[in-house]
Amino acid sequence: MNSLRPNWIFAGLCAFTVVLAAPSGPAFAQGKLEAQYEATLAGIPVGRGAWNIDISDDQYSASAVGGTAGLLKTFASGTGSSNAQGRVVNGVLVPTNYTATTTTPKKSETIHMVLNNGTIKEYAIEPEPPVDPDRILVTEAHKRGVFDPMTGSMLRVPGTADPVSPEACRGSAAEFDGRMRYDLKLEFKRMETVKSEKGYQGPVVVCAIYFTPVAGYIPDRPVIKHLSAARNIEIAFAPVLGTRILVPYRMVIPTYLGVAMLEATSFITTATPPRVAKTN
Image 1 (cartoon, rainbow, N blue to C red):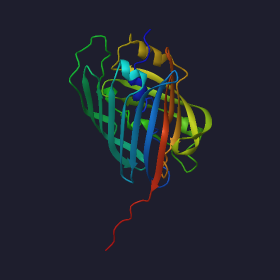
Image 2: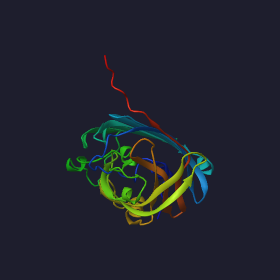
Image 3: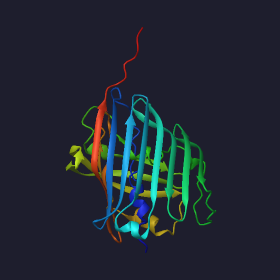
């Protein structure tokens, strides 16, 4: 069986995580994140990436970029980027736009989606891929009640208690990445304390995550079989200060070539004061 493709290591920054659309707590605060990540496979550096998030009282934006590095770049170079924008409604992140681009020496592909209250209103893959009869069809029903994978990488914890807690690892959600529709479920594993090279030092909550493909995938693909059967994928979540949003600090995916890990080296997060309404 083939191992996971390198791009899946970087895609982990944007997927395999979940948003909990739960009732809102007190007024939603605001914050920013500027983070740098390193990807390793069996302890060998294979890629680097960056992630920026800006959350205000009524809207949010997130962007991530990554590319191969180190030994892997000698054999297979590639870069990728993802961007998402949306509204903040009663503390809940509501996506409106998502774009993802991957580029290799052989081809470049861009996925774009427009969402409205959890429904995919339009999406396209450029260039349009050939039709594969083995791919499970995505129906209109599959495109309702979903998050894009970038918004899905931000975990909202309702309530007033410390969001970095076991409560963060409760829930499941549906995601659509422009090609595949899948379900994700979290389960609490443990609490840890981390110390990045620059920025955040403090607690993280570690969740197990379980992946279930629904549509838009080819059942015989080795990577799909591996991820569906895996029971040892885990993500450590750290907070975006000033908000009740947690984002991945570290992700671990065992593969047949060794453990694939994406971990923050720099995690700089700041709370921003809420906007004050102008008065005459």
